[in-house]
Length: 141
Image 1 (cartoon, rainbow, N blue to C red):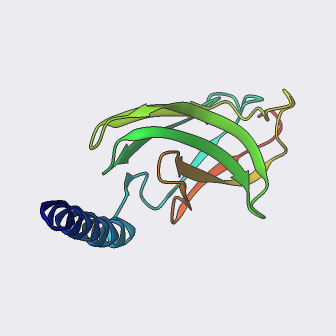
Image 2 (tube, rainbow, N blue to C red):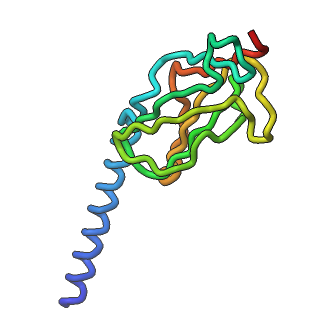
């Protein structure tokens, strides 16, 4: 009789934990995950431009959640181009990142606009920084 009561208690605890996890997951989906970068376009020219533009794109990334994060650059048609960072982020801590304009293959990316993608490894969430673009300017000035 006592074993039945313990098994019912264990079952109730598992159900309660599952419901709690569901509500936590739903709250996490609605939570703003990215604080920076905000809407902006960063212009840079790896090939040089007479000092008018930086040779690298420098930008801060600040998330409201911590954990293992992969930050990548994508083309405007969502094709992965380069991994900018693969590291542990602490929640609300700003990470200063940069992109040199070089693709993962080692070639200089063509002039144009690029997007920033952020992947939270633990949760499997991936999103593109809204309104944020990297503008690679080609040629030398």
